Length: 280
Image 1 (cartoon, rainbow, N blue to C red):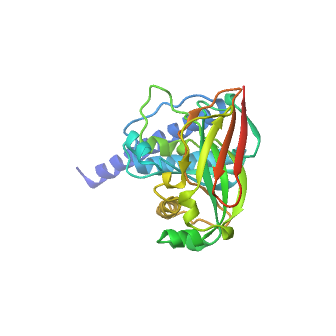
Image 2 (tube, one colour):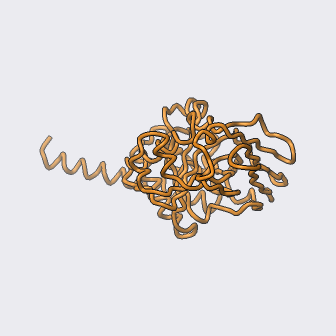
Image 3 (cartoon, one colour):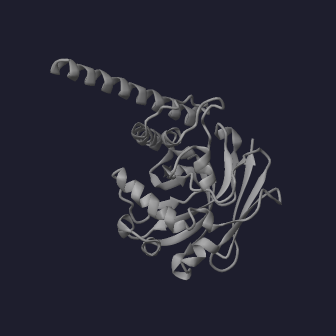
């Protein structure tokens, strides 16, 4: 094959790849705006998935505001095994996705909303980007917040779901309800792995209580992974960025009429609660 032919083939392949990515972006943005399930591709390349997510987030910022922070998905061994991946996935949270405590959320605002207890921490120091140990990560945050994420599984029921697919759809980011905030100056690092949280639906527990150890053994391990993955993408975590560290409790399907309370114990003094109501 001549050099010219190789060059033409490369151009054609690049154009086809760009067109395919644009198709993904259009479908995902439509899912967010019109609650239409997304058709997927089991062979989606991980690098292409990251670029698709970047373009999706850029498109959504017009209606959802500036970047609030980032979220980690698949932070438990069970979730990673289910989707045949060996590490978490990174998504982006926008300001318009974050709701105040006691929020009322319409189940019609998503394709397939779920509810799960999560945890937020806030970046205080850019040294988090070079943190190498949990202690260094802990020293680079200044706030922790109780948090209930309401992710949206926008993928059509009969479609393949892989790590790259979940990356492309921005790790399912849709809504999150932010509860009480605690200054980390009043906490010991050990409390992050030892605290417990229980999710209640209409006054009844949705499952057994979970601890911070559900997050890769220690929430600071998730922070380290997120900083490393952000760096791989050319993203610098900045003071004020919030990091959502992943699901603590098993996700449950959102149903209109349900009231949820996520109750956190031993994370600072007293009990922290996040409350929300699901409406039609």
